[in-house]
Amino acid sequence: MTPPVDITKDHNPLRSPLDKRLPRIAGPCSVVLFGVTGDLARKKLMPAIYDLFHRGLLPPGFSLVGFARRDWEDQDFMQIVKDAVRERARTGFDEKVWTNLADGIRFVPGTFDDPKAFEFLATTLKELEQTRGTEGNAAFYLSIPPGSFAQVCEQLEAAGLTEPKGDAWRRVVIEKPFGHDLESARELNDIVEGVFPADSIFRIDHYLGKETVQNILAFRFANEMFEPIWNANHVDHVQITMAEDIGIGGRAGYYDGIGAARDVIQNHLLQLLALTAMEQPLSFDAKDLRAEKEKVLAAVKLPGDLAAATARGQYAEGWQGAQKVPGFLAEEGIDPQSQTETYAAVKLGINTRRWAGVPFYLRTGKRLGKRVTEIAVVFKNAATPFDANQTEELGRNAVVIRVQPDEGVTMRFGSKVPGSNSFEVRDVTMDFGYGSAFTDSSPEAYERLILDVLLGDPPLFPRHEEVELSWRILDPIEQFWAEQECQPEQYESGTWGPRTSDDMMARDGRVWRMP
Ligand code: BG6
Image 1 (cartoon, rainbow, N blue to C red):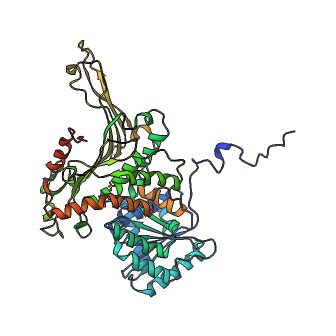
Image 2 (tube, protein in one colour; image 1 turned 60 degrees about the vertical axis):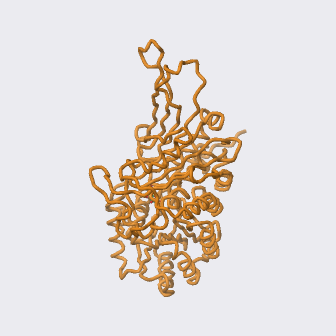
Image 3 (cartoon, rainbow, N blue to C red; image 1 turned 180 degrees about the vertical axis):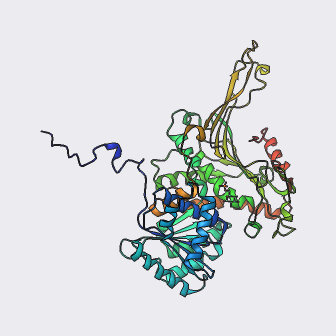
């Protein structure tokens, strides 16, 4: 006889704890934010924390502690957070939600070299454990220059903050750049791993938090249609573009001497390449996903002739929309002799059976014609019975994953021109747009990533091995450029970058897509 059903229990297997659609809510905890006066904290981190709280994904006793060299009281910091939230929150400002969040906001004034400030931080976290029920769990978010990571980690350790009691956890979040070359990345890693265990370190590459970047996995591995043609038999080449229309803004101190390749190619673009080119992982668990990404990064091959396979440029004055804008060398805080590039393009190969002979072209630049990030997989020409003149206006088939803005996927293929009795074939496009297919707006990358840190969920965070592999790809290119000791080619602001970049494509008989 079957036992009677206990109606107090939910028997729907779709709603079991294994149901991956259930909202994931962080447990009790605090976030300690270092670098609260920086742009990132104000524009992204504070609004993302509020949005998570507003969406009910943070626990009621959640606490936010700011740490900075400012003579502030809790109230002053609260006001800073409130202003940032009012200005940028995605989910809109709600006074009641804000009041609940503000109850758990604290501020610790101090400098990174002051042990007393870290002792006060320890006392503050203890107080929050008792008053807000944070259970001693804390994430330390280092939104500060990497030069200060070591000092902050040492101080956290000295104040006993890295060793949680009982079941509590302590995690550290670090933002890119993870070093400026392989050697410095290793040094940095040794410092951080000397204080926190590897699985408590969360390295943020915010591109991995973008919905459209995660969608690369769904697009490739949840569908049957694309994977069979996703290889050297059918793909002619791949173009990965991250173009920005803005200049360096107020970031001269960070950017000069770093440049576009270290700022963007080493991390965001190589991650996009890895997701586009990797084999299907066993699962989407961190271990399996990272293993596949690492295999691809390890298989990346630089072309022999780096002069022909790379390009670098620097924006000159020009126009951004209707506004006249200065060149990079005239930006405040930039050395007028600076040889830092604001545009970089590289051609890479991938030494695997799937991708043998298929070039991956990566480009990024500031002050380009338009803000757009996309991955274009361009296919070979079909062997067709059509005459050349019937297909004059037929380009190559392409799948374009539009990462931002206007998130979606476009497919380009040939279609018969209606009414043409000569059977003329021309390019048409078929489009999926997030905006029209889904009603909910996508969460910001930082909402997703901060939540994952608090849940201790690591798949979207590159581990040190990936960082090392990426520097191994970039270091020889940077070295080659440094040896040349020449000024990057100037390009007018508002255009599509230096001529040498177009020449690089032309040598291969290809052109950059015009997004
Ligand atoms: C950052 C770079 O990682 O990404 C910036 O340091 C760049 O230079 C930014 O502007 C772009 O991010 P997004 O999400 O606007 O494409």
